[in-house]
Amino acid sequence: MKKTIAIVVAAAVIGCALWRLWPSSGRQAAGLAERPRLCEACGFRFQGTTEPVMVECPKCKKLAGIRVNVFVCRKCGESFEAFYTKPEDPTLRAIDPMKPPPVLLYKREGGEWDKSRKRLGEFKCPKCGSKDVGPSLPKS
Image 1: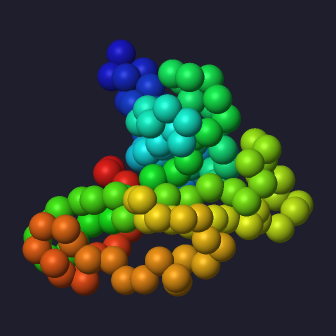
Image 2: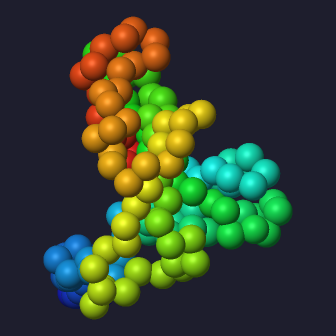
């Protein structure tokens, strides 16, 4: 009986170790499967794919879901929406790894779409004013 239990436990441990070591190219880490989205048409906020494509809004069903890029202040910990992104080609629905990445457009809230992220300028924390900010990391 003890030998059978030891074999089952050993097999389970080996199975878990192999699963953890297996290449994760087909898996997405927790927190990376979705990111905040905003519908440009109706203003509805929802979670959507991480791909830089337009997605359908679950509320109005229009292909108008843009990505919301959230930053975090490294000084006070405040998180805030820094800017939005969408592909220049709004009909783009999936990324083809054999083609170059899509051309993205960028804007701050209330601003105009632009091909240059640099023209958005520096970002600072809306709470403490610190410029020590950057993209938020996925929660693990």
